[in-house]
Length: 270
Ligand SMILES: [Zn+2]
Ligand SMILES: [Zn+2]
Image 1 (cartoon, rainbow, N blue to C red):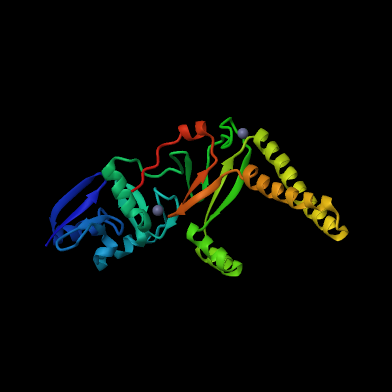
Image 2: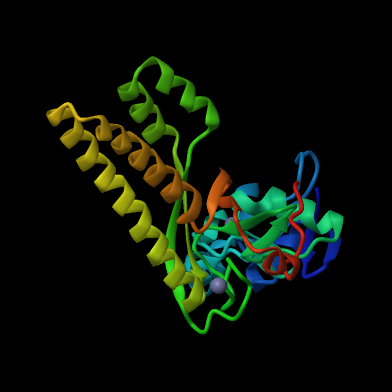
């Protein structure tokens, strides 16, 4: 039986079963090393290929098997048993296929932000550059923690049936991505002003509407108008970035400044 194994950027082998065992015992091939032999359908980490170090060498190796790994693609910690090494990078099981495909296409792995047309793509937990997403000027250290929520648009159909059903489905299917984004002091100030205008119209619309209704006064019609204006204003002007999709821990966001996007690498769909 002959084995092949990955070492850095190289494919090594074939080696005999005995030679392979020696490599394992020496630690050259460890639990995360990608290995292959007939009749495995694809390369897999040694741990998944059903091989262990021989008993005599075990005392020297447990640390390797227990060490926590950080995935080079998604940046999340991953247990060493679920981690594979690709070109010298630790990659979690969830990112393995993606990383292999990226390497085949010559796309660099890792990263936290990309551009996809007019949309900003960010990875969950990313810290975006010190640059304002709204005007692309330096953010001067001014950052905002945001949590983006999204659910598949089909869920909106439930809204037509029953609002409670909609809420339940939305909670079940929603996905979230958290990020720290740069927003310059100027844009922050404008947003506070817009929030104030929006809520003022919203609340005064309610007050005027109900007061008009109670008094049977014709000016009560101004209430719903003000109220609707407030809602549209809040939705249209105070959202920093609007998620249009969340998939595999990455969010597609609308509303980012074009110069900001221009500096980011292009997103590659795999
Ligand atoms: Zn990963
Ligand atoms: Zn700004």
